[in-house]
Image (cartoon, rainbow, N blue to C red; front, top):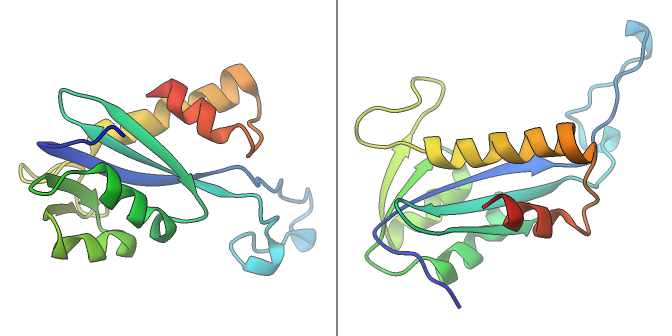
Length: 146
């Protein structure tokens, strides 16, 4: 099994389960609510070693991917992540550098721009080349983008 070390950026993004909004405003539903979602959304978590490999994992949520991150990232690694609550449990095991994207994208201490770049390419591939990605194949497409 491949493990990453040194400086690793981690982040998660959700794919699939898009619900097209209704044409008329009065027919639209709040797509953020669980009862108005399809249940098909999956979270792709990327772990990018600076100057090294990129590993991906598909899970139901970022929280569900934490055990996989702990298996794939070696002890003593410095992890850069955003302020998502899922990554809070990693503070016990790794040196963490966190970035609050509502304030800035890079503060000189923490930066997840490489992982954000990965998601940009994956979203562009989904919309431009493939038009849609079935959840059964999401893991393969994510690994290919790495």
